[in-house]
Image 1 (cartoon, rainbow, N blue to C red):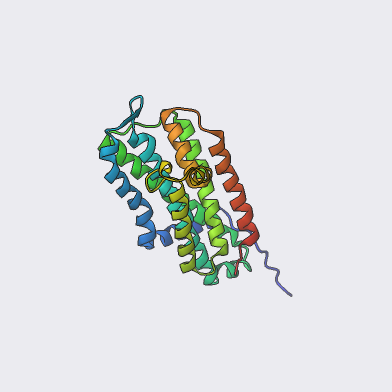
Image 2: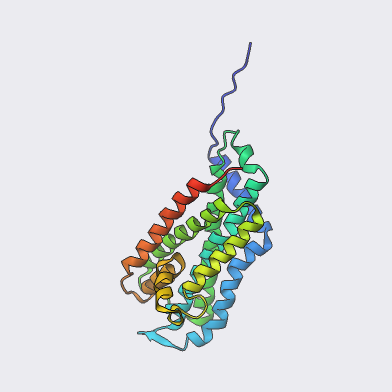
Amino acid sequence: MSTVIEARRPGVRSWLTLVGCEAKMVVRDTAGLVVPVLLPLLILVMSAQSAGDQVVVGELTALEVYVLPLVLTMVLASIGIINMPSFLAYYRRSGILRRLAVTPASPAMVLVAQVIVSVLQALVGLAGALAVAFLAFDARPPVDLGAAFAVYGLAMAAMYAVGMIVAAVAPTPNSAVAIGLITFFALGALGGMFGGASGLPETLAVIGERLPFGAAVAALSAAWVGGPVDAVHLISLGVATVVGVVTAALLFRWE
């Protein structure tokens, strides 16, 4: 008499276990864990003293209006565009995703777990940057706190969507890092990471402000001063999220 074994979908416990395993992988990757958090902090510390003396709007200084939005966007971009794709490319190259495809656990679970861990890492970077800015340099919180959190969440989605495209097209972990770095620095350069968009030709400055990095910096800056967030920046982040997810879904290979 044959025995029928019923395959069951993983429950909450399985999800928590997978997220825990992903977190351990990230923690063991010292460079991937430290660089996305410490590099923006280094830029913050190097710029905070002089920027904190330049009053820009009301009582807000260049530290709050320019430096902090830039630093927080760098945290998101480095984790979403460089770190996360390299892990996913490694899982595909090593056959982990292919093996999961023949089990009740879908390979998509790894993607979701990696995104969850990346979000947690981004929140740690956010908390660290704000703690240093508030405690060491007397920075002020955003005037429109709700808008700032909403923009940060949308910017996170956009950066991770771009990272999913990188993971989809990169054949190896090393190539994922290389493509991620190129994408990160290209978006950052056009978005004002190396001295502000005012130093770019007008056409490039406009393009950079419509891309995820520049749009995130501009929208966070507007929320910090309490002004209206330009709809163009929100639309840019939303479009980047949708295009990134759709493109990654079409191009992503499980093996």
